Length: 280
Length: 315
Image 1 (cartoon, chains in turn orange, brown):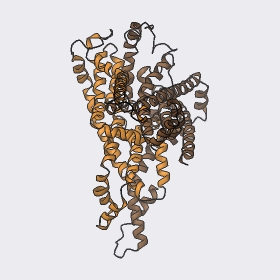
Image 2 (cartoon, each protein chain N blue to C red):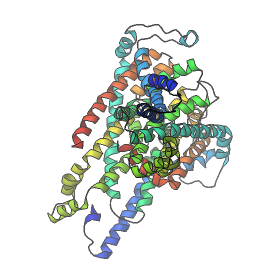
Image 3 (tube, helix red, strand yellow):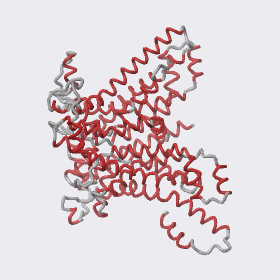
Image 4 (cartoon, helix red, strand yellow):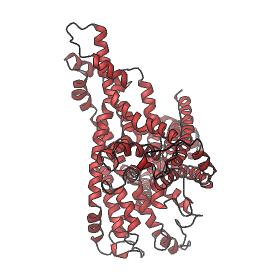
């Protein structure tokens, strides 16, 4: 609220602003400390069950090399599954968002409402029923089965987000394309999708993050080691390597890297996604 | 919806030599439904069907054998009475409520304080604000494991730190039934702060500045301005944050499994973990479905509350 008071004497205001920056850095330090500690522990793999030094004395990357050899495959699995889930999610939700934004179909309101309702279905309830169907369909322990389940995490979110965006695509643009003789599919692919680029990127990003973070479907829809994403890999790692925190933390660092990269490269979209996803 | 689409599509390929308008219109409708139908089918399969199936499953008798014989005979209300009479269910229900309420309260208050703080203008504001999101973006199970290391009684950094500054230093954060639930709540508060902060910050930016100018002309104190201008103007956003927070917190599973696995002595067992234990550890999917249905009922009650709050806010 201090920002709203009209500027008093300039030096005092500047002092207060710098004070706020210092306070902000402190807040950030506290909030990010656990992540720092994860990195710090990962760089001191020898300390095992002992206490960890506040800063790594020397860079010991053996935890990381062990993590890569033990968990590298699971990281790759996560990447494949997440990219597949993003593809399914966008392929299903982008046309739906457009249809719900534009066509005025009977039942649009019901469908949008249903999309919102899906948010309250607990994941474990879905897993409970899904596992049984997956057994019958032979989808347990399959990449495709996990991709489908993970796509379900992003689809309602993406529909809501993209629909909100596509409602504001000017009708004239769409009509102009139709006068040029483009059918609905062509109009959608050539005109609407390029114009909705930002919404598509945001949705895709979140679909990726949801899928990358998924633990529950990974845990429940796989009974063998064939399809094991990194979240499940790390979880089982601590079960088996309680004394080897260095490697566990190194694997954790690696699993957090995509989130960090996305945050730095696409923070605009991330912020848009968090707020956009809440305007329901 | 799908059946009518299929039959209509089968009729459609008639030669359109002289298309009559009614038929053209119908064909256009059909093409339009083609855009929406896959998503509807997907959501019916992945959300609608599990809801129905869980209700049915809660009246069926599942055993580990079921997966070989695929026989799960109906057993009336046996699952329900068994689960509801089990003392663990009451405990899990209570833990769920405490966990959810405690998490929401902490996340919201700290998130709001940070949102107000970041509404000031100062150098590096934007960078700090986006970096604070990181805890929310890291997979929850990973956060849980990191905190498990930090909270370790003998070698964790939290106890080391508390020992150095002279505030004890041997709290069994995750291994004592008295403290474990509190620890899990504290970690979840840490995870939820960024989400609350970002949405509340967005809400704060929407409040017209004239209101603050008017308040300061009236000589209102900062606290008075906050209570009489900020909070009322923020109410719709606050509702959204709390309801979304409730929906995602009440069903949390990965964090608790990573931190405590529901222990020690079931001290952190919630409805979510209990569903998991019943179904995927005991392989009693009927009992799991019962707990899951209770979880849905709680969410649904809250959803009704949300929709009603939304409707009044819209006006």
